[in-house]
Length: 112
Length: 112
Image (tube, rainbow over all chains, first blue to last red; front, side, top):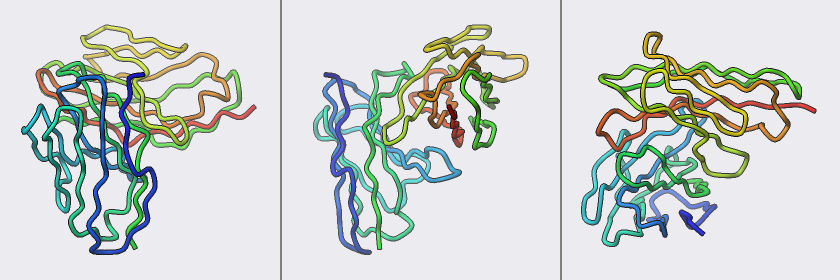
């Protein structure tokens, strides 16, 4: 089954404790992206990757890191989480220039 | 820059009512336009799309027509069901650009 898998789905952590949200897709997509969803703000892009070893900042990259060492994986790293990073995070992937993003089920992160 | 503005919600309807969600966009060139739907507890999924002016996208009884003269892509459904309760996002992708710009989302609740 074609899918984008994120883990963990839910996480409560404390300020400053490094965490990683994993994302994996099995559709051989070149393009992958991370979004955060906040009430009234819709989806905002954090980082994206056009292919292996190619990443770039989205609209709200501060406080986040990513890596793309393999085509299927695109982890989101929060080196020192802060409460303003409490949000619902989505990973998505697609073939280039189709606009049809496939989304994971989301990871709800709470930073205390 | 590219942006999407969609009507604010929430929208509450009775079953079999007519639904319309307004979406207007600002973009250079000729973007592709999309509607994504997010059912409770799930990630977003593509509902329909249109890639050029006057195209009509349709799926699951929903329709939207790409109107370049009014820079709009309004979503409509003639008779909604309880199962249509979801958050709906309008989005655009500029020509030759991987990135999708999303609207803030409109929450729709359909009551039996």
